[in-house]
Image (cartoon, rainbow, N blue to C red; front, side, top):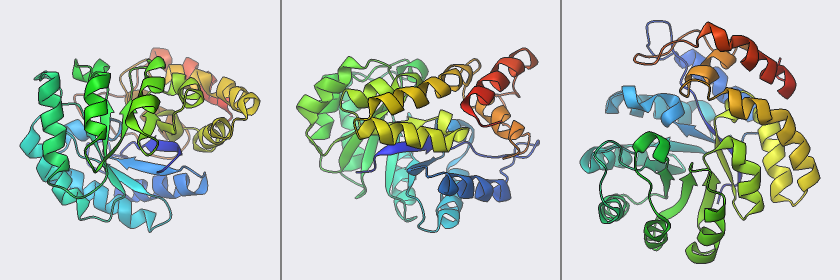
Length: 291
């Protein structure tokens, strides 16, 4: 089980939208140096929705290459087509990754039984640990607790990223999913409370910008040092908010560019961060100590 701060890594791009692989290496090194506990490659923050399967696999493969065993890499391999998600998961599993992260199918809104069958189908065909990803704000569908519990009984479904910000769910997962089922917050603002309730860490957008402090906060919370964790989280609180004033990863890419980590590139239909929000995000970055 990986615990702590797992970064939902942004994908650096040139202004024409093509992937900047030198920039990707720089980001991987940055996270190794700042003690990030794992990298999620081509998840939502990595703009997976605008990449085809060969491109996603290339980004995952290069991330693994650049990590060089120094940090675990988890691949985002979900989709709203079961056959496409299966293909991506099969191919990613051959790339020396730690696990796959599979989002609830979006747009087509299956039933809870459909969700169960979708994830079970892939898990039974690809022998790699698989983490569920429930983010109803993007998928327009909430995977309910009973479905998660059923899926936790499938051998290689090993955890969930829960981005509902519904902290009371954690206690139910702890009680019914067993001690080996990994619980990750997908909502930076409630991560501290999520860990206090029994969670194991977060899959974080904020960690793109303040990786060392997110790692320290999660480590303190997991150790039961709530005073330290709360102090660190207070310093991060502005980022937890301001990194979502426009759709993720728009603000995160601007902030990383402001720090000199990546160039000014994002892929349509996403656009570069709107000018009216610059000052407030910069203020949050200063408060977090990254500028």
